[in-house]
Image (cartoon, rainbow, N blue to C red):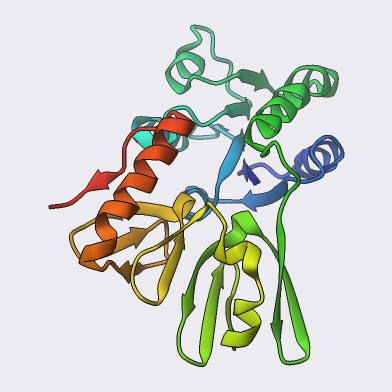
Length: 255
C-alpha cells in the first residue's frame, strides 16, 4: 500500500517522511512535486492517504490553481473519499477549502509538529490498518536465471502464461521468465486475487478499471488484455464480489 506526499513547499518533507515511516513502516511513500505527478501515481497505485503541503500565498495573490486541482480531484468519484490532510500557508477563515475538500485536517503554517504527531499520524495509522489484509502479507519470488525478484502480491498487476515463456507485470517491472518457474508458484496460480481473462492472461482484480466485450482495461498505464467470450461472465462475477466486499461502486461495463 502507498501514501502520497504532494509538496510544493519542501520545508517539512523530511519531517513528514521520518515520522510517517516510523508510524507506518510497511507503507511506501511517494513524493510528488506537481499535480500531474499526483494523478499519475493515483492511477497506478493503491493509495491509502494523501498529504498535501502547498504554498498558496504568493506575491501575486492566492495560488487558486493549486486549490482548484484538489477540488477537481475530489470531484472524481474514484478519489472522492481519499483520506486527505492539507498543510498550507493560507488562513481559511470561513473553512471554505477545508469543507469543500473534505479534509481530515487543515493545518496552517508554520506547522505545529506536536499537533501533527498527535492528530495526523494516528489518522494515517488507522487508514493503513484498514487496508491491511487480516492474514500475513504474501510475497512471491520470481526467478529469472541467476536473478530473483521478491514482489508482494498486491504489486503484481498481471501475468501471462505461454508454452515456454511467462511474463510477470508488477508496479515497477515486466519480468520475463521460464514457464517452469512460474508453474512452481502454486500460491500464485490459486490466489483469489487473480482472474483468468483469456487463455494466457491473468489479472489482479484490484487493477481492473473496465470490462468491455472483448478486452479488460487496467488502471493507469498498464494497458489492456484480451478477454475471451467464455471468460467474461466469470471476470464480471469476480469483480462484483470484490466490489460488494470492499463497498466500492461497480466496475464500468462497456457494451
